Length: 249
Picture 1 (tube, helix red, strand yellow):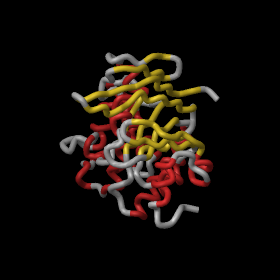
Picture 2: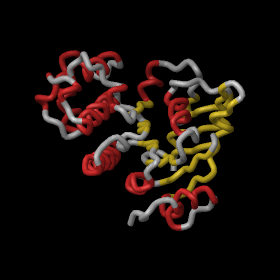
Picture 3: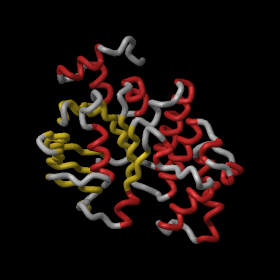
Picture 4: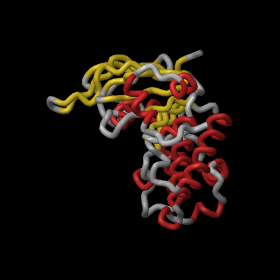
């Protein structure tokens, strides 16, 4: 299968501390890679480097066959979109949902100005929100609804890779389930490639095709979801699984 993303020898240092240590990672097109590991293992740092928010000290990132350098073009930036644990990180509280979506659509020239409202309504429909939401503000929505708006904003620029960094960890279990179902639907309908970060192995089991495990800035295991949950190869992976009270079925 064709590779959507290739990470080669990626290294990030902060003073004498190595946050990422020669990371090697391949992500196949139209699949979801679940990235797990303890707090401080480097998961979010890796996500931010891939998204272009942090410059690496060493290594190479390829999106398809195109190398992503430290200074990226507008087109390269829009191809990788990130969804954060706290949706407020990407939603301006002073802007209506109409403004939030239209700014992205116009800045990246996705549609003409005359088509912005139609496209904005389509995006809200994709994340199962009503069109009348356009003239409301982020604080008028629940946490789960704000996360759906953040997903709509990320999708508005038609990315080829979606990075989701703990997008459900702050949500109630019932809301969490509906957001995970939305990710599954969007991935299938839009042929998305997804890097999904979570500390919750139940979530990783629900969304992933492949599982990668990080520890102390290193990738210690990459395996198919079934292989990881049935017979993990690395001792640390087995420790993570043994800490789960009840394994997902």
